[in-house]
Length: 243
Image (tube, rainbow, N blue to C red):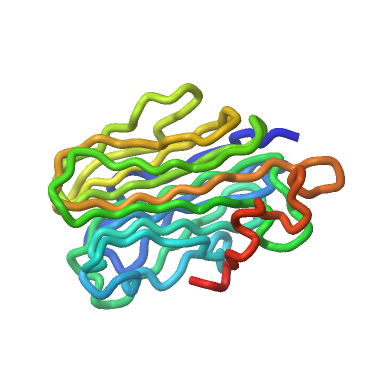
């Protein structure tokens, strides 16, 4: 069964001096997973400002994060399998010292991902990059073994510049923008062609962080094809708890 897109939510500029950001997201009754990408400028140490994400009051699991060396441009991805259907809230929480931050919280729900076999089966091949030097672009390459999977990614840049999404077949811009001195954007590629896929953005900034992940499709029996543990062979040692 191929992954199909269900719904998206959020904007490119909904984090501005925030300690909590709430985004309304509506899942279809057949949605099997929801992902949230939080791309933002942090005022503190690396990956310290974002304390967690929930959907419909349920804690989401962090897949991974990308952060530049001083920890100020960060992109993080969270997911929840078997989410509540209908209209519910995504809530991203920041510690109290987050005044001065900026960026975006964006949600994506999909149909056709595994819902059994462990929490890791709905994703594989997390990829990230970050730079602290003058740059005009950012890109990541995400393996994709079959044409049934999907890819999502998010980027943040350290300037009042809106990032421009690269043009890949079937890739769709979720949202992008800039506010409070930070630009951010997110996109999804459904269906993702077979083979490795490059997700790129262009901008003019002194720094950036980008993160992306492949969303696995369900095969007969409820697990991704050829992945008895729900992960590709290159990622079986990568645990959701090893952050």
